[in-house]
Length: 305
Image 1 (cartoon, rainbow, N blue to C red):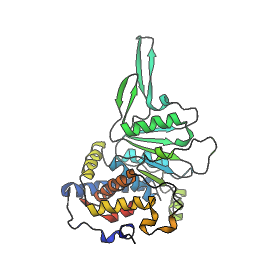
Image 2 (cartoon, rainbow, N blue to C red):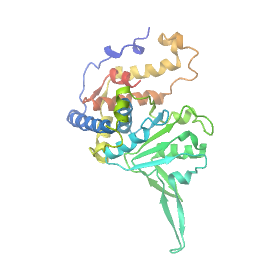
Image 3 (cartoon, one colour):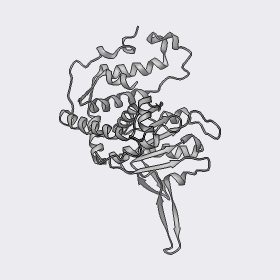
């Protein structure tokens, strides 16, 4: 039996190297305050909020899958308010064109010149609502911005503001008039989160109007603070054992039998790519910082897997 595919408790770095001891405590206070402020408005989606914040610390993007009405839009708006960033939203439809997303050049007869009109992607937090309803060329335009953090309009390049995070949503219960995201494009997202219904008590509180959209989130961070914590997360120490655990988890999806998971053989068409291993380690580093540590443990990896 492969020890790396089971309980991670024994995989603790032999030397708990505190790579960012000074920043870790500050980051924990600020980031926990950010989560608390978000939870005042977005009720019953604690796991989603934590994962989205981790993605922002990693510089990654998130694909949210869930039925309508589960506070996905409210989550993005609230996070933008709490981190003091700008918010953009694009409702993807079959008639959308890339220029609607990234912007275009508009002729000005009064001046005899073209004026560049930047699109909604120029925001710190972008909600790409129902991304699977737009044709492939629009999806590709968005994924290019996600990868390059810039767009080219009329031969000139324009950088999106930093930090830049895309939260794309898709509805799993409707397939008519949709364009399924290819696996290669889904792989560009750091996390794919399946958003579930809130607990009954949380839903009762929302239904009574005790919390939710009536509450106003206050600004806790600035975008430059998030960039500083992102740099600190990148410096979090990762022991070889912890990285090995992440790689073995990914490899178990490719070769289940080699990890004593024979019952999964034939159930997985294609295993996770090396990007998954990298994402697990990056996420574990951000989660460690969120928990006030300067080193990542296998438990951090396990919690994200």
